[in-house]
Image: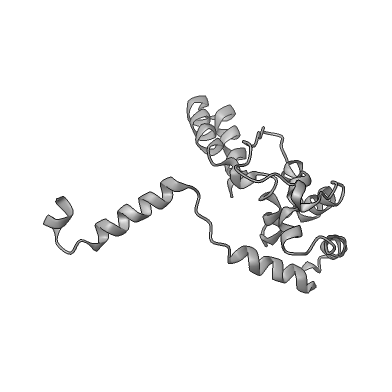
Length: 164
């Protein structure tokens, strides 16, 4: 995942090659919106993520804003260092997905269930996971443009059409 990629980049930077690590960090920092406070709670749908309890605890300890008070637009760049933990990326903006899906009152139940390792038994949690897994995500305009170019190139039947 993207968070682990940041962590690996710091390890490469400090233990193998500062230049390669710096290049990787520079690249990943341009894609850090995946780790913005509004998006971080989606990690709760990852069956392999072991820090669910910490993320839920941090969310419950964070003030839940009114939906109209949550800023819209492009997220600010996320600052990550070698010691950053996923739950540290949670802010009041992290409530957005729960507000939109009307799940803000479910998290205390999720907290108890994750502690007892029974989170999969919670119907609203399963609906949340289904929603997350079925989200369509396009990173940015560049990826959309590349996809359009590839579609155009692949639509050409003959090699000479591709060359022109």
